[in-house]
Image (cartoon, rainbow, N blue to C red; front, side):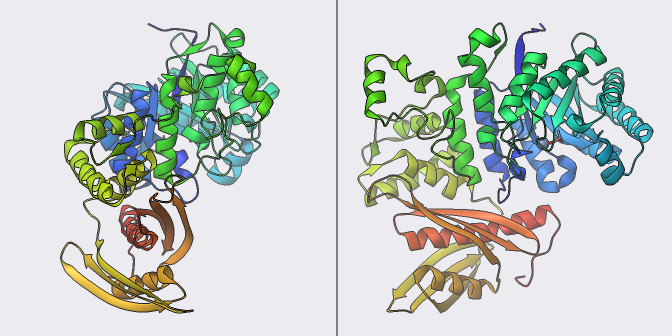
Length: 518
Ligand code: KIV
Ligand code: ZN
C-alpha cells in the first residue's frame, strides 16, 4: 500500500559512486555491496549502466539475478540501444526499474546534447514509453534539473508521467543548489506537475558545495519521497549525498520530520560503510559524520564526564543505532569455522561455501603467524584474497626473494601466467618494493604507470597485517589492487599483481587491448 510519509532510499554506490576517481569494483565486490544494501532494506539499488560496457552489463545482470527483495535499477540514456540493454540486464530481477535520463538545462541541451527543447521532449516520449514496455518500473531523471527552466521542467515531467514513469527525479547534477532555494524549487515542481497518485518525486544531489545532504533533507520537507545517494557519499568530484547522514538526520530529528520515516535498518549502516570503504579503497575520514572512527569518541575530559553520567549530554544518537560497536570476541587459532562464519556475517560479508572455505584456510594460515586475528585482518583477507581474485585473473605470485643492501636492493620474482606459464626475472631498485616491482614488470614484459601507492596496518598492533593499495594505469585504463600479509614486501607484490589483473579485466570490459604483454 502506498505510504505518503515514507521516504524511499535509492542507492547508487555501484553506479554514480563507482565514478569516483580511482575506484573500480569487480562483479564479486559489487555483489557483496548489493547484498549488504539489501540486508539494510534499501529500497532501490542502481547496479550500473549496462550500455556503458560489457562489464557494467554483467554486474547489473549478476545483481538482478542474485539479490532478491529489492528493486534493481539500471541506468540508460533515452536512446533505444541503452534502454534495451538495461531491460536485458534486468531480465532476472525480482523488481526491475529502468532509470532513463536526459538533460533539460539550457546549457546541457545546447552544448552537450545539441538538441532543441522540442527535440528533448521527443526523446523523453520515446525513451520513457519504450522503457515502460520493458520493465515493471520506470524512473525518469531530468539531468541538471536544478539549472533548468521551471516551466520547461514541469512540461518534461508531465510528459514522462503520461508515458509511464512512476518516479520523477530532480537531480542537482553539478551540486549548485542551496537548501532554501532547492526546497522551493522542488515544491514548485511538485505543485506544477500535479502528478497522479502513485507517482513520486525523487532527488539526486551532488556535494560540490558540501550541501548534498542538506539539499536532500530540504527536498524531503518539500514533499519529495525518494532520496538518491551513496554510502560514505562516494562519487565523482565532491561525491553524492551520503545515505547514512540523510537517514540518521530523519531518524534523530523525528521531532522535525515525523510522520516522515524510512524503512532502513540503521544498525547496518556502519558495516556497509566499512565494506564500501574497504572494497573501493576510499578511506572514511575519522571525523566523518555517522560512520567515521571518531563519530562516537569523546576526547575532552569534560565531555567524557558528561557522557558517563548521562549519554545524552553529548550524544545525539547511539553508536549501536548505526551498528558501530567494537567486536568483543577476538578470533585466534582455536576459533572454529562456525565462529569465523559468524564474524564474516557481522562484518557484512555474505560469501558462498567455496569462498568461505578458502577464506577460512587463509585465516588458519594467518593464525600460525600471529596470535590474535583482528577484524581488520579478516576484512583484508576477504577483500584482497577472495573478492579481488576473479577466475579470469591472469597472473599469480609463486615465489619471491629480496636482498636489501646499502642504497641498492635486488629482487627475484616467479609468477604464473594464465594458470600455466611460469615467468621468472630479477631486477634492482632503490628499495625492496621498488626492485620487486621492476622484476615483475620485466617478468611480465608489461610496464604500466604507478599512479598511487599506500601501505597501512590493519590494526594498531605491531603484529598487524600490512595492507598495500596500488593504482596502475595503462592505455587510458586504470585499476586498483590490494594485498595484505604480515610481510609488507609480499603485500606490496600481491597488490601490484592484483592491480595488473584488474587492469586486464577493466580493459577487456571496455574493449581496450593492453600491449605489449600478449
Ligand atoms: O548527477 C546526475 O544527474 C545523474 C543522473 C544520471 C541521475 O547521475
Ligand atoms: Zn549523479
